[in-house]
Length: 114
Image 1: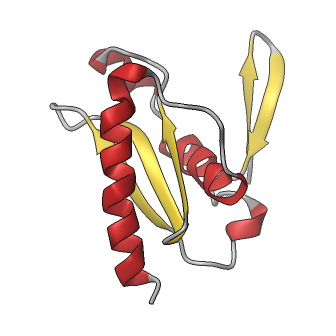
Image 2: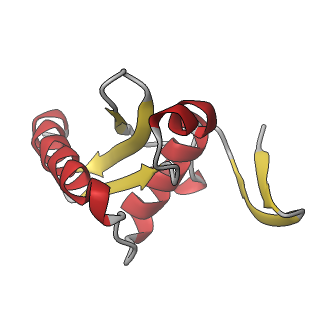
């Protein structure tokens, strides 16, 4: 099963709910970033202590975040970034939160992937 993301009628990418093909056979740790109300707005994924990726919902308001955040797509993007790396930086309002989440995930992954 896969889903296609479209923007203005054009296909942007197709993703699988299980994540990228290259991580299907290995364990993945996931953690979600949540706002004050408990609504998720981001995801951090670790394939190893050195392979960590992240994704954020582009909405900046909590109400829109709750309506538009898609956990499946967030896991997929975070796994892709863990495997391929990224030069994309989170927008400045969320930079510190993402860096803290990555640091926590690195500690967690170090313990898990012994």
